Length: 256
Image 1 (cartoon, rainbow, N blue to C red):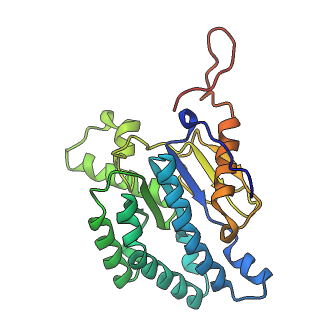
Image 2: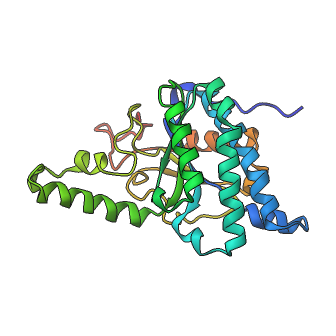
């Protein structure tokens, strides 16, 4: 039996973001259709979310469907939307059992009507849950979010509800897709990317400005709880300075 990776509770990240890469390649490597990888990947979400609750992670953001993914073959997009719809229905009992609050960020109006309705219903049903916030990035693009935030601020200024001089980092955060996090976990502490990739891929550019990046070789369908804990242990080994050096010249791990 493999030895469980021990983590330091006091140094766990508050906000974990994961780029779930390698579903299609994993399936093709096994001689299956790419959609088989997406189906297996959906199963992994349950295990990672449950472990996040157990660890006390405040917020878990998963890059589920990017704005660029709309350009994939229509059949694959249809399968992905179907999987999302099924996930929202099938996982509701798990969300309830673990006290998980569902959230979604992105240009959600682009989702199929049935998917959007089920998404809204699941968000409403879990709104008061006290544990981990599971934030699904759907039809999401980081540049889109920044542009849409600027537009929202411009509307506020044009309407006389906001003075230009009052636009600061806090105001900008409040106008992002998710607004301010009720758990105070706006900034991402660690970005984990699977399948050995090292790109940010237009994911949370505002929120990840001081995030640590951890790449794991396993594709998302093989991302087990053990791999998750290994990635978190790698994060805990990092020295987070946030641009600062203590007065005594000794580098330290700074609090989140």
